[in-house]
Length: 135
Image 1: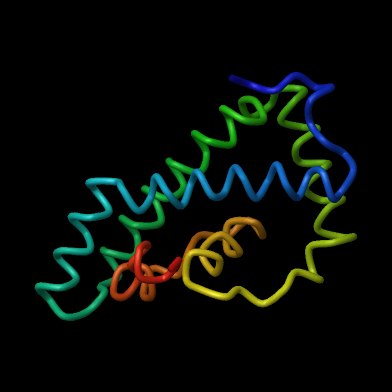
Image 2: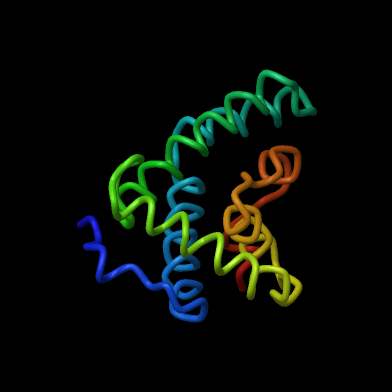
């Protein structure tokens, strides 16, 4: 369900909670995605992450990320999406730089998304195991 303008937090603390929750959903879906799992299997077979693997991974992550952002904050160009961008920029200036160091790979990957990036393909495709890294 897309948020209404009045539902999108401007206050940095409230926005941070909403934004982290969105990114947790993104990482969880990335971990379960069959296309990404196929890329991981190819990496295991070849023993290395190729430029093609990185490109496929980044495209798929961006697709999943954009889907969740649209669901939570509205489609690109909408009023709610513009408010989301303003809230994100405001959060980044005030609180984004003071985040604690991640304790595991799950948090590390969320951190990449929080700042507008994608998880590191080399680490994610080679080593990231959701169940080992969050327990």
